[in-house]
Length: 245
Image (tube, rainbow, N blue to C red; front, side, top):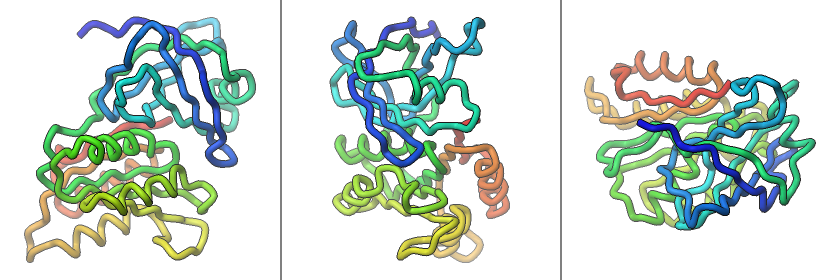
């Protein structure tokens, strides 16, 4: 497969989402529309190093295909992160950034004929936001789709009201935010207990409910999820992952 060419994206809007995350809307003037599948990512070429491959930073697209030439990224400021420090401290509306993509195979099939568990932490929610909106807008056939999003406190919840409203309006799509460092009226603890409880509640004797698992976030969460899911009895081929960091 040929590599996507490098193109120029213009930053047309920047908004703070939480105290340490920002949303960046990028427009690609040379294209009438940006074609991509929910779950794919783009690679930005940032002027932060002399060597090309040390300037590249990849981010999942947080928006969904809408027929325009604009896509959205949601980015967290990393401590000592050269790429995110540049994006937060230097980039402003109207600036242009070289990028390549969208690419990637972290995508859903056309028909969701089993339960799907979309498990994430932090900005790992980006590809799943894209997927859920696409399912809803395009009336993609599905069973149950569970978005299980783990973070520390309610102030860290990305797209909270939007996702609550989306799932309330679409049966079979479920949004379960989980807080690990704060008590509230929702789920607390870690994401692993949430999907484990959902699965065990559906288990028929020794038979597990059919399911696919999509994991996106930091390595520790993904490693723990793979361990938990396989210990429940699922085959590794049911697990799909996108690793950050």
